[in-house]
Amino acid sequence: MRYIKECGQTKPNTILQLLYIRSCYASQDQLTDEDQHEIQTICLSILKNNSHLVNSTFMEGIIMGLCCTPLWRNSLEYLNNFKNEKDIKIRAYSCTIFKAFKEEEIDIGWSLIQTMYNQHEILLTSVFAAWFNLCDINKNYSYQKVLEFLRDNECIVRTHLAELIHEKYKQYGSKITTTIIKPDGRCTNCNQILKPVEITNSEFKALQESFMSRVVIGKNIFNNSSPQELNNFKDFIKNTAPYDVVVDGLNVAYAYRGKIANDSLIKIVLKILIKQKSKVLLFGRKHLVQQLGNEFNFIKRNVNIFFADDLSKDDPFLLYAAMYSGIQTKILTRDLMRGHKFLLNNSKMQNIFQKWLQKNRLILKIRPQNEVFIRNPIPYLQTTQESGKGIWHLPYEEIKEPGSWSKPNSSPDNWMCIKTLD
Image (cartoon, rainbow, N blue to C red; front, side, top):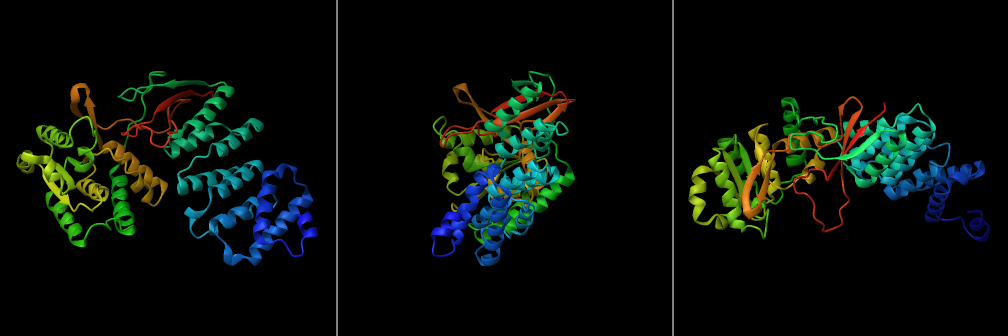
């Protein structure tokens, strides 16, 4: 920067200054007190003279610069005051977290990790590595803080973070084993049973209210439907609910494309539910009538049916019907509804939604010789949890390449059993 100032005819522009700040952050361990003072001066000058240009990329550069200086706490104010939290860059959070841990401002660091996760649903391996490194330096801090965070947020981690946790706990002397969880939730390694999926009546009521206000009304998610169709649907649900099962007709019809003909699968599934004497709502598009063929009249006599226009989105209708119907109503679909989870207003409500969906989503399976059966929902909690004194179970997923196969039932790819020394 000094060289630019000496050679240039004019003062370096803002873009050049921001690039300089970023380069300083990359080599922050070599910065002198004079360098830090210069960066601090540049950051404050840019903010003062360019307040009208503030956006997420601009602010990310400023925060990276401030985190090289004693004024790093100013970053907290800028993060808090940014109008659209979703636009705050991950790098802005991570830089401030790294600095907070370096300065041993533990509460600040973990509060920012929570905020970052709430906003972006991201678990940065580098952030947790910074915590582990701090624990290695200062024995007053515990590795277990990471597992507690993953437990409290009901997380399933990716392979890279799982490998880091495995490496650190192994160095620490803990016994770590890749394990298999049996259908009843029992760990084949330690024989502990994982916690059941539980949702209280009050949690479900809060979820109903949040879904209706935030997702249905707030996001106007029925945009592709006409007001008349939506009103007809609401009246239909009011008059025919509650149901035992709500079936995503189109999703089920195409669930195993190529194995069983589309028209056969949906008919087989409905006959299974009818035989079980379940009260069923079949939701689908109008062209699904053709797939039901000659059996349509039989199904119509035994199943409540609502067909929407072919342009309508299915998910909001399904969720509305199931939530209106009550806490015990099951859903038959292979859709994981991730988009609707993220539309809810906070991480607690998202976790309740995830538990409700896991507890109520039936699983469609096809055995050899094309034998179709419907499996009950997985009964155990499929998130990080402490199963006994000092025994933890950590689910983790492999990072999939675009277009690769992934499990349709959202169950984790792998489980880790950790016996800690704490």
